[in-house]
Length: 320
Picture: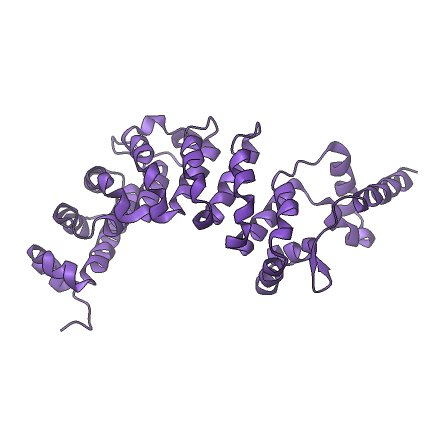
């Protein structure tokens, strides 16, 4: 009896769903098919199909991004997962996590074609549920180059009460590259006052029992500054301080970021030279790689002759 009721509920739900917005398709396959295929590993044809569908996919993707199954959908989904013969119906009742995962894939595949969704995603940054705010920040990071108007809403999200939203906003801002310049003051404020970074205690591994800043907590901020590049030059003094006295993981990230932000800075190169002979392998490797990156530019190499010995050691093999 219960089985019949459950099957009836499934059929009824599918009938009701059929009256909703028609799902876009390509090559005779619906969007949901291509999303499932992409997440399952068949990425290239799925991405091509989703790009062909284009902006028509956005309503479905935005809906999946906010997925929050009601109790009856959860019960039906649980029932279907126990019925091998009804496997063909499972795609209609994915878990919220699976629907969001597929939405991420879809937005990533669309890239620039997802630009019309940016205003709605910015609005979702103010959603009541933290999960929805985090999802919006994550997608804005995926399509960041087409979402430059999102920079200030993402800066606001750095102060979100939820640590996961804060951290996701930092990574989203890093995806903007030089376009993230307006976020530099806010990122620097977080770097200078690590006690204000909520995820230090809630999301990351604890730092070593020293006075050094926690590397796992600071990494996203330092990484974001590096991705912004020369536009984040005001961060150089702080990054040099982290490189000199930070926790090894933070030091390594600071070394990589300094190479991207200030390759022509005498102070930065001197600090990197010192770090290159650090007893910590992670730090020395990162600093050496940063110096190699700087030395690969002949003009910069000539300007920074004072680093002679180190630069001679790192001289590219093709150089004469």
